[in-house]
Image (tube, rainbow, N blue to C red; front, side):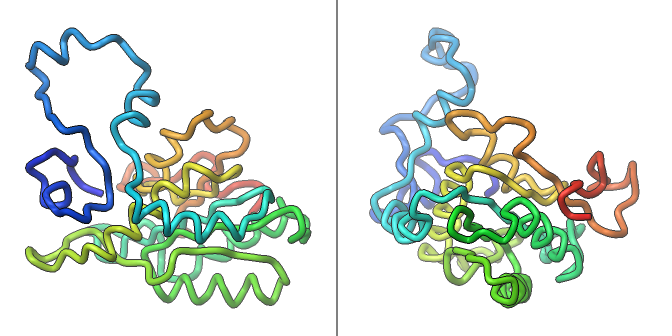
Length: 226
């Protein structure tokens, strides 16, 4: 998601906007902002950005499938339409799957995955691979690419699903994220309560180069993926 949502943003102006924003806006120089209490960034963000009724309905359809199990996020963001890819099309997806399999120890009665991806081919690959392992995976249908959209191509339904993806990532118990992608890392940053570090794992591209965008995570691959 680029930018921010104010009353002037096209999403906020729509009557069926997928997000709820305050009925006011303020700038960095406004007196009201300078007098705001020094709240923690996470608490403030959770107050200002909340899912709409439509988004909650989508979320409820996913969380109802979790049934109290430990949820492992597979946030596989390829950046396929960005100027620089984060991951090759399907290859690194195996590391996310390996992590899920190792953490869950093959017990789908206690663990379930939530898949968030910008690539339909990755989505199909993961669904098929997880099925072979006899593990469960949940996902919001029809992932869409949200970068470099042509003016006028915005799909309210598609954007609504992306917001559902974003808020659902805040509800998982363990996160396996794509190094270099802000989508997953930003979502879990606003999780309440915060994520313990040992439950956040980053996967780099196989051919990443340190010092060149998007760089490599440290370690390059999580131990659970080996």
